[in-house]
Structures are given as structure tokens and as C-alpha cells.
Length: 285
Image 1: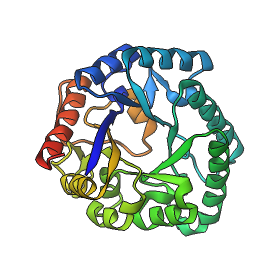
Image 2: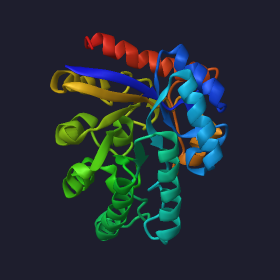
Image 3: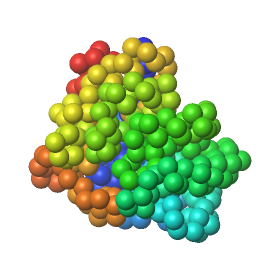
Image 4: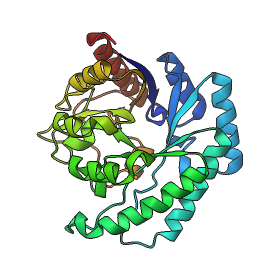
């Protein structure tokens, strides 16, 4: 039986770090996947800002599940070196903050082009990033995201099998739906590679995001299988996407749509957390 540990993208609840901490503590969540803080992307923090963030989180008793970075959300046909320099800055921030994982991606494909044409370049870039991360003692974890090389289950498995245990994998059911991939079939193909999950659900007919368990992401079934098959800690990061805010619209290449209406970001965050907790109760986790 798994031991599920909850984390969250708290920037979906609020911009200010103190308010993010308040939202996490109100939900009894002890980990954060740090993506945006005080209106700044985690990738753009200075060393001093990173020290202040880490100190505030430590004081509140909140740890890091990962740095929710934008690395790899970058066109594959653009020069790599500027992005690689930014990535190295992110690794340095992780070391300062005591964060051992970086969420990342496998590069945006040119629109209309066959991703197979870019496989070699994607793998070369990821190999360089993995070398740098391993030297820094940090794990890279790839998220399936629409429009990147690893957006389908087939290409995610290609990445995982090529890099073996070097590259971790974040399973996001809603992102698979938005690529026209059935999440349960994807889980069948990828379950042995899953490092942790982003908890986000969506409707197959429109791609619109909904609370976990209310869409076509088979979230309950996937959690039940993880609970049955895993022994030990499994992190579940709540990623609501139920209310729009500046940091989210800047992070997404495609417009973000949801199928539920909330009066404010904190209400949406609380609803997403409650939906996950209800599913965990249903499966006896």
C-alpha cells in the first residue's frame, strides 16, 4: 500500500508567499512545488530571494516536493545555450534552497512538424541537462505537456526507456487528455516509470479542466492502482487550473480553460484539494 504525501502549486491560491503558506497550512499540506512566488517565476529568483523563500518555508514547516520550473518549455529549434544557462541558474537555486527535484519538459516542437525529426536533438539536450543535474545532486523529473516531444504516452515511454532511471516522470492525466490520449491506457504503459503525479482532471470533449474525479482522467482508478501496487511514499501535487491568474497564463502556450466557476483563486485551490482528499478516502488510502 502506498503512503500518499500531498504537495501543491500554491501559487494558484495566491501570489504572496505568506498567503501561499497560509493556504497550504489550512489544507494540512506540508510540501510545495514552487513555481511562482511574490509574482516572480521560480526560475527568475535571485540568490537572496531564494534564501528568503527557503527560510520562510522552513519556518512554516513546509518542505519542497520539487521546483516547478519552466525548463524545457522552450522551442527545440532555438539556440540551446541561453536556455541551458538559465537551467544551470535553477540548479544553483535548488542547492541553495535544499530542493532535490526539478520538474521540467522536453521542448516545444515546431508546429506541424513530426516530433520524430527532433528526437536526436531532444535527447542531446536532455542528456546535457541530466549531466548537470546529477553533478549538482538534483533529480530531473519530466512532465507530459501538450506540444512538447514527450506529450504522448508513446514518446514519454521513449524518453523513460532511453534514459533509464536517470530521468523521473510526472504523470498528469489532464495533460494527456488535452493531447487526445486516454490517461488509463497511458498509465498502463507508463506506470512503472511514474515518480509522482500532478492531480489535475479534464474533459475529453473539450480539454477543459475540472476537479479531480469529475473528468475523464480516470484519476480515482489510477490512484487506486498506485495504492495497490506501490509500497512507500508517493507524492501527489495538486495543480488546480480552476481559476486563471497571471502566472498561469504566462506558463501555458495554449489558452487555459476550465469547466467550473469559482469566486476566487483560494476557493478554487481549496476545492481542488478537497476533491483529491475525497478520492483518497474513497479508495481507502
